[in-house]
Image 1: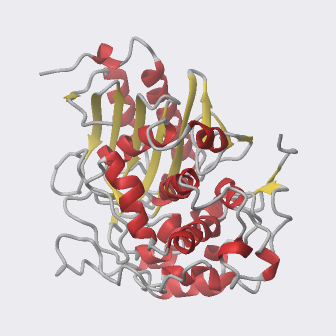
Image 2: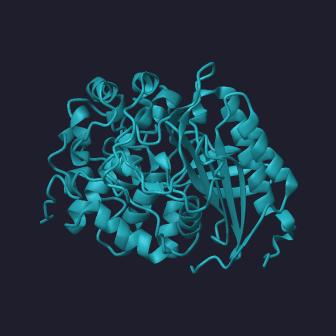
Length: 426
């Protein structure tokens, strides 16, 4: 029999190194738009759904400076664009050699540049972490890809019981998105720092039917990864946060990554901003509680850790060959939110980005103050992350420019000549 997990592991405290800080209260602008923290996917994807066809480590030793002036100009141009983010940082790693590109500032008014060890919200890139946990448990035979909600979470509606772990990870489950619930949105608008019981987020949609028969369509849903984490907990009897530490953080040596429940960020951190045109930038770094996103988007990491993670997850470091084959059974047209560069296709908590220069595997994310792109080659030896300090998805022109910059960095990563010829600097 599956063991029940208590409803509130991890408590209500943030992982911030400054527990006495409360930070400024969310401003009126942020309060009005706060639902975007966990509903960005809902806003962007609308009703779009793609039909599904029948289915047949070690430390980085070197960090160079700006090896390629063209890449540095591209990042600086993004920051300098109308409504552009106050800061941006890109980390490229190939065969243990790391290059860091940065533009703008980590905090307005200080001039401090973004750094690889600055903390930041990774938004929906956290879904790849839930995939890493679930697929690691598949490797350990604690879970199966064909295991159903009915087996592990029988308390959820009977109409959902046939949904499988595979469908949850690939966003073909049909689960209604809790972040679209009017009741959930009303709470976030009233108090962006509201502490949710993360393990009860699906309660907002338990009265709703599936959006479509499981496995028949693709539709990005924040509910999917909440259910994945709950299944992992039920299968192991351990809190999701503990599983992250055991199965992901420790094997990949992620020392700056955590899943907080509160709104505070560990120091130092990249400050995220609302950059509404015609208004001064508003710092929204600590405006929203992570508890309302949890396994779907609540993880805090650093540019260096995120780069390390995606190389391990997309590459062979974490999973067996058989599980990786299932992970990389891609559904054309299934896009991450926001869409990554090139043509997107959806695997299991992993997306394929086919660019003009070649293919990388990864995930994206966006939340007020931050937009993320993380991808790597199939062998895990080349990885790229691009992190910017605004929610670029709110401006279609800025998002298009960001995707072009991401593709430029992917091309540099895949070019065997490489930026600055990838020579380590002393």
